[in-house]
Image (cartoon, rainbow, N blue to C red; front, side, top):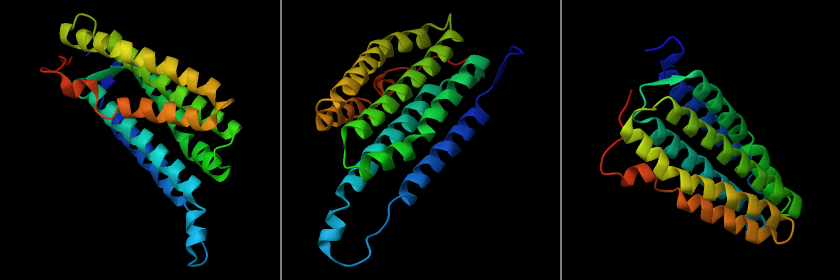
Length: 199
């Protein structure tokens, strides 16, 4: 192992901890209504829908992050910093979620939420690229990265479209975001017959 390469264990453990805290903060933002009137509970639908959407995104990132690192035995400095950038933008999810739900999917809240998802996708792409760079010469991993690239680039493009659409038709922007998320529910790596070689 080169001097500039480190075991992946601490990266995975720290990432798991941050993601767990993000989910915890989001659920703590859910406030039960004071009263037993069904209308009061029904009035919370924007907040509950925002939470469900964000939980789905965070869960997808956790699963794909785990899949991305599954065959990696060590990481370089570029991967460490790319991972920190990803965790930074993911840590903003509780704020964006609360802003989205409490303002009932207004244009600005939806735009901010779409911009956050674009930032998360960009940082994940940087992490994947950093890991791929340290796997040069590993045919299996290079093939996997090439297979993932079109999907990741298409997602970045669609997230950008969602940002523009947010200013015009907020609900359509959220629909675009949800569809992008669904496309990542099953990581591409799960469909591979083999696994990318580790280093």
